[in-house]
Length: 396
Length: 133
Image (tube, rainbow over all chains, first blue to last red; front, side, top):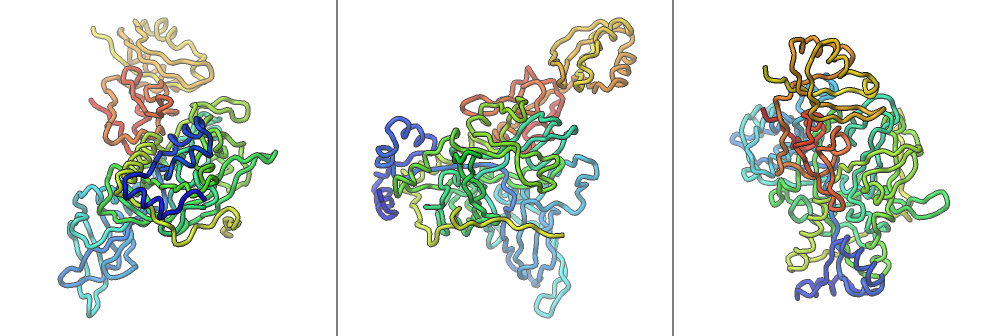
């Protein structure tokens, strides 16, 4: 072991901790070798900024006079789930207004949804709040139509059940028509390839065996401070391998994260619209990785050339949930702007912002270096590839 | 008579057809090709300045064979504060006006290459691209 959490935090408090972003650490390892780099650096910071479905916020509106036990609630016309308590609701990122034309004029625009409500909240903009009820002896009121801002309500807690996907598919279209997916517009006959990961900066690609990330890990979330609450839904971590047994880097892990929406910023939480698909929320997340051992440092030094994404056809294989893929490509190749699939050279484009991921890793580095962000030792680590978790099929 | 500026967008099947020749020969139009992005087996775009008495006939001919014809009276602008530099537009933009600067992976917009096809308007997840009249 190189150092403990308490040793790292003591160094952070005295302003002596050596902190590097993941891309800087990769360069240092190339220059000085793994052992020397691991002895020098205490913490490596990571970052990712992209669309993350399975996001949302718990809101407590406070009680009106007379009281209402909200049965159904809408924020700017977007339904929020109110079946929690009298004035608690959960606004989900992919929720849409009931009068949205959806895909009736295909491909639909989905200009405003739950993700945009969250962006409006965190921007301190006024929002319309409507709610209905059936009236009870203790909660007699049957409807309310008012305006709120995030400052007017008791709590706004971002709680995202599945974020920061460890790795993601590189999406292509083998069919003869343009398709509109959550991976963007995919042109026919392998016209383009879209991927969505910050690669060598991405948090969970840098801790494949979950040796540092666990319940209680303090993180950068939406511009503020947040925590890892649990493993994310569909957390099925594994190490990908080529047919000849070479490691292609991890895939399948996810995080459930939580934090106070009131101290976050619209720069790092943005409502997004995917034409023909729906709306969602783009989230900025950064996770610090303490270099407790040389093994952890080795994983943190994984570069784009070591990390691979599976190429998946979104015209047939993905919607049909058919197993297999069209091969694996490295993030170094994806970032070059061109990959070759089935013998055809096709242009690539990211859906995850590398410049913003780099900025998040830089902000987190600055917060730790300046002593304003201490590392939290997890109360329990998350399930790792060794636990062998895998996805279930929904019959029906 | 001042020339009319138009944008043409067409699929790979049109690329093989001598459409400019037809506009000149059959409709007696004077044509200046301002920008062109035509490659075999790929979708193409063209910006033309056209003068002549039979412009409408020529445009109807183009529409009839499947070319999208649009007047170029608008420009596209990017809301720099809203853009997250994700890159989702860069493999869609037909002229490379939206492109990634490597190795920084920053998304840039070159208005001079833009033909106002407006594809980016509906592709941009944060709706950072706008039409200005």
